[in-house]
Image 1 (spheres, rainbow, N blue to C red):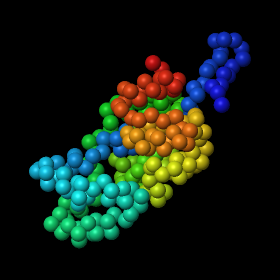
Image 2 (cartoon, rainbow, N blue to C red; image 1 turned 135 degrees about the horizontal axis):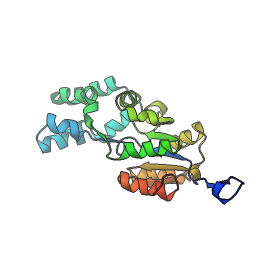
Image 3 (cartoon, one colour; image 1 turned 120 degrees about the vertical axis):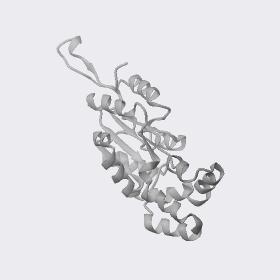
Image 4 (cartoon, rainbow, N blue to C red; image 1 turned 90 degrees about the horizontal axis):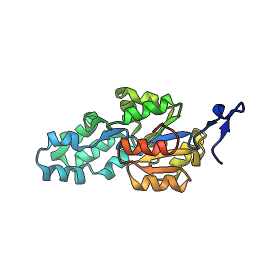
Length: 220
C-alpha cells in the first residue's frame, strides 16, 4: 500500500494523503501523567518505607493483575490480609487512585486537538482496569476526542500480549502499516511493530509532534 493522490483538475487540486491514517496512544505515561508516587509521597513521607510499600505491598505486578480485570475489592482485601499494618494505605490505592494522576502529559492535549482538527482518527490502547478507565474518561474531558479505545480490563489481556493488538486492529478495521502507535514502554512498542504497526516509543509531546509531522499528519 502506498500514499494516495486525489484530485484531477490540475496540480493545485492534487492532495497527497498521509500514509498513516490513524493514531493510537497509550494512556498512562503518554496522555496522562500517572504514578503512584504522586499519592504515596504524601501518605508515606519516608522514602525507604514508601519504596518498600510500592515494591512489596502494592507492587506493579499486583497493579497489572488489576489492569487485566481482577476485582478491586478482592485484590485490596487480599493485600490487607497479607499486610495488615498497611491496610489503610492499601485501601487508598483504590479510593484515591485519581490522586496518582498529576494531569495530562504536557503538550499532549494540544497534539490531540491538532490531530482532531486535521481529521485524524484517535484511539487509545491502554493497560488499565475497566473501572479506572471509566473514572479517567469522566474526569478528563479531552478523552472525548477519541474515536475508540481498547482497554485491558475490558479485554482480559494486557500489552504486550499480541492478542490485544489484534483486537485493536480488527475492532476498528485498522490497517497495521497505516496505523501509528506510541507507548512509553519499549516492550509494548516492539509488540506493536511485530504486527506491522508503525510504532514509536514516547518521549515527550514535542518529539511525538515531530514524528507526526514526518508522517504527514501534522504541519511543521
